[in-house]
Length: 391
Ligand SMILES: Cc1ncc(COP(=O)(O)O)c(C=O)c1O
Image 1 (cartoon, rainbow, N blue to C red):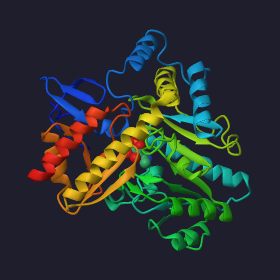
Image 2 (cartoon, rainbow, N blue to C red):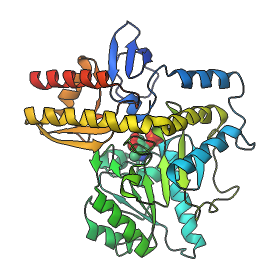
Image 3 (spheres, helix red, strand yellow):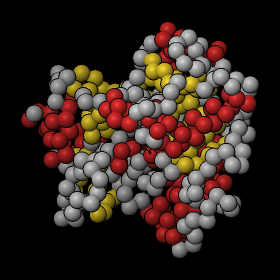
Image 4 (tube, rainbow, N blue to C red):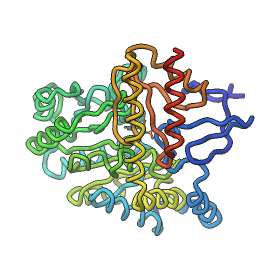
């Protein structure tokens, strides 16, 4: 009975009670293949032995002590993030939106410390989704997310995806409002329809940020932490952001975000500037440690291999079904863009036991757990072929 739950989500009636790998089981014994992974979260799938053992052990020790005290797992996770990203230091948060709030505050303060008091604006892209708290929402494009809640924070300029001239103008502060502290960019937009901004655009954005003294924040909350076969999507382009925000798969299903910065920015925030009661505590960091160690130990290669298998299967389907106009994305972050009927296809897939979702109105989005097997992908492609044929 959900009458006491505020209806911010349309929930399916199924109750999932257990799972293994990429497969979920309902309370009445039905099995689903999960190609959504709790919206890009369940990196290690369900029932992962090492993760389960680590959490069982940690649950019997301490769950929380607060950030007033050191904890080795917090420090080890920060160290592994530095190793994986080639950056320097992390602030931990409890969600993606909070990681972006930290990035917003940090980049404004960094500009102030450089003597650029006036650089208080931000630039973001059309199609962007950076979160739902008031700061991150101000950087999120899309009337449906924003309009009921205005006024949002002022000084945000949105630029069309692909419009380098528009981006150059916005970064030079040629529009209305204050000059920007930072550009926020998802290398592959998730909610925006698995929309790859493209290597050329991303590299040009970095160059324009350098030319104009704007800080580059890559929001890799959905496309990062291994999702595309490299730890960061930015690494495919050798792109060096000033700030990277992470969340979703970071702690394998527990709520955790991180705002990771270069050594130049590591000293920007000092005690009292920012904080979180819960974030980066021993329980979530114990989980993140497992995820980050698995990613060091061959999981990235598996993601790349399985991603290629899934993509080639989807491209095959696109040849047979003209209603598929595009296969999008990279690694295990893929989307099927349909001319019509994407929501109907998603519903049919669900009825047939394959969990996906529909984003941007016309894209069926696939974000399976990193531990998805060859057989799982073969089965998902079979279900997709069946549903496409019968629609
Ligand atoms: C790219 C991106 N940024 C930020 C967020 C917000 O993350 P959260 O829902 O954990 O606050 C999301 C969530 O979908 C996202 O995809």
